[in-house]
Length: 314
Image (cartoon, rainbow, N blue to C red; front, side, top):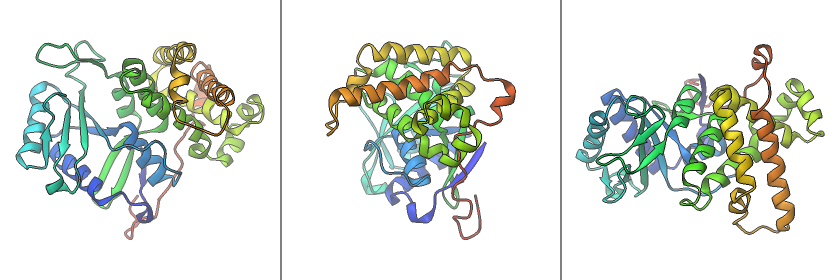
């Protein structure tokens, strides 16, 4: 598992840090392994970790909780509410809100259980009637391919690596693309556009020159292709093919138009073509035949913040 640290000069907002600390303490008290997911995880890793420009603004905090049953999940909510640090949402079963008077900021926090609680495996049906169903397969992929991030000394949070983020975002878009107005599609394309910076030009040209050349010398397309290979290695061939099919079908439906919802100076047709090119590069990586020998080369996590803390902690 990769370990990185957030440099002090790119520290998180104090209120967000307090929210993460509170959830971390509650999960540890009950022995619940967890990971931070969603757009907030992307921003922490890419903006606070790598120092890249901010992406789509978000105020949501999403947590995946590996629990054996609903009793353990309810026990966590009981602890959070008892401390008067969080309040329930009356209408959404997986959402709670941080209490501003206690934690400094009112923020929606989504708690999504996975693991032994799934029925059938890969599917979560919320009680009492199971009418609200979620595909949680991406959580297991992300949990198995996470990045341990030191938010500050004494607080480490598991985040999905960039490749497993693409898996989660694609499956989320399939499930809720219409409801969330394309936010998952936007997040996925942002990851692909930033893959060049995530991997780094030196690694691209030193370790993946053949992919750069096959991509017409375009490092951005080559990086998206490599991220696709990483996603395939993380998710497995069957799920990688499913993700490729979802995106291929999506490009013929509303995926690209959802991404293009924001205004840009570049003409619509040019932006549409650019998005399709980078999605196709990612799909090609998902469908690549990667030999065991070649797998050793593929890593989308650069080492950052190794000596960020005064005590040298990483």
